[in-house]
Length: 239
Length: 178
Image (cartoon, rainbow over all chains, first blue to last red; front, top):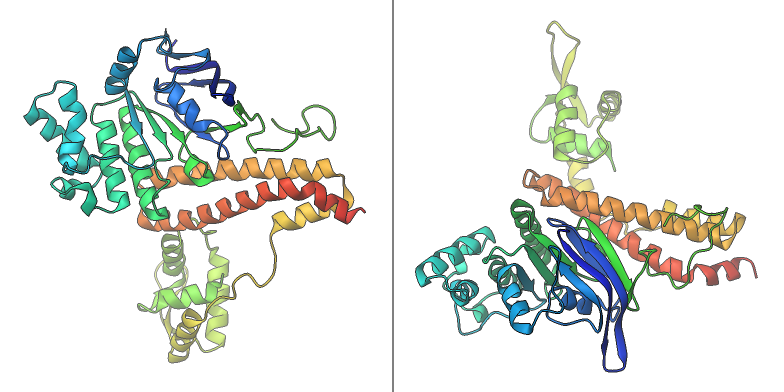
C-alpha cells in the first residue's frame, strides 16, 4: 500500500477530544486540503499524520508501514528525511541568514557545508528569493520569510510536505505567491502535500478537500448543522 | 460590460477594422465571453451613427469589405469620460443565486432550498478549484491571472454567502411561512 493513511484516529488533550475517529487516505503526489472551522481538529490531524503527535487510538501508515508506534527517534528521523513541515509562521532561526536557515536541515542530515550551501541557494532561487540569501529574517517581509521557510521545508526533497495554515499570516498577494510556487514545485517533484487551511480559496489549490467538523470528517463538506433530509427519495441530495 | 467602450479603447491606439477589433478584444479580455463578429459590426455601426468613430477607408482584397475605423475627438472624450466614471457599487441585489433561494422558499419546502444551496456550493467549489489550477499553470499569462483572480474573489464571496445562508435558511423559511 502506498501513500499516507489514517485509520480511525482518536486524539484528546486531557479530557478534551480533538479527533474522534478520523480516517483519511492520501495518495502519493496528491495535494489534499484539510479544512474546517477553528477547533475542528485539523491541526491535530496534521500533527498525527506527520508523526509529531501519537494518536490515542487508531493507526497512521506511510508506504505500507505503521509509523505511529515507532519510537520518537525514528519518527523524528522520518521528519528530517521523507517528511517536511511548514507552519503558519515560518519559524526561521533569527540569528541565521536565509541561506544558512535553508542549509540547516541538510547539515543536520550530514551533508557537507559546501553542498548544503549550494542546495540552499538553489532552493531560494526556485522560491524567487535568491536575492535574500545573505539577509536575516528580521529584515524580510512576512511573505519573504515564508518563501524562505518553504525552501527550507523542501530542500531535503521530502516525499510529503505538511503545511499548517502556511499563508495564515500573509496578505492575499503574499499568500498566493507562496502557494503558487509551492504547488508548482510539488507537482514538478511529485511531492504529496497535506495542507491545513480554513479558507476556501486556499483549499482550492489542492486536488481535493476533506472537511473536519468537531473531530470527525464532515461528509457534506459544508459544515452543515444538521444532516440534509433527501427531498425526493434517496439520492436527491448529492453526497 | 460596455462593448462600445471596449471598442473605443481598442481604437485609441490607431484605426483598425472589425476583424482586428474582435481579435484584440478576445486577447485583451481573456476569459470574457468571446465577441461575435455580428456584435462588433453592429456596435461599430452605432458608434459611427453617434459620431464617435468614422470610417478610415476600405481595403478591398479578394475577401469581403474591410472597413477600418478611427476614433473621433468626440469618441475620445466619451472614452475618457467612461474611464473616469466610478461604477455604482452594486446598487441592486441582482444575484441569480439569491433570487433562486428566495423563490425556492416561496414555492417549495425548506429542503428544496437547502438542496439547491448545497448543490450550488459544490459547483462553486469545483469552479474555484478549476480556476486556481489556471493560476498555478506556468503557461498562464498575467492577463489570465488577473482575469481569473477577479472570478476567484467573487466565487469565494459567493461561497461564504452560500454557507452563511445554509445556516440561516430554516429561520428564513419560518419568516416566509409564519
